[in-house]
Image (cartoon, rainbow, N blue to C red):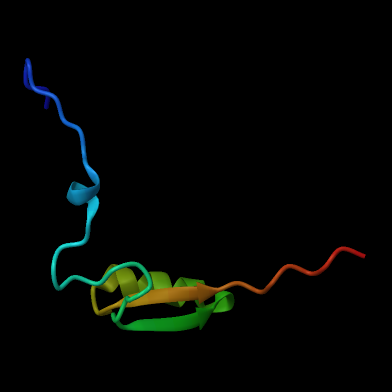
Length: 66
């Protein structure tokens, strides 16, 4: 929503993390890694709302070029 005559510019202070909140690299939430073959299961679990935290699908590393 635009407000006539108003401007918005974020400063470094505006982008700083809130006191007591995790900063980059400090995530302490719950995650569960699943192989890519279980992607359908991961989607069902997320859509059911029964999961807490994050589900991470693991993808195999690309093969090096010959």
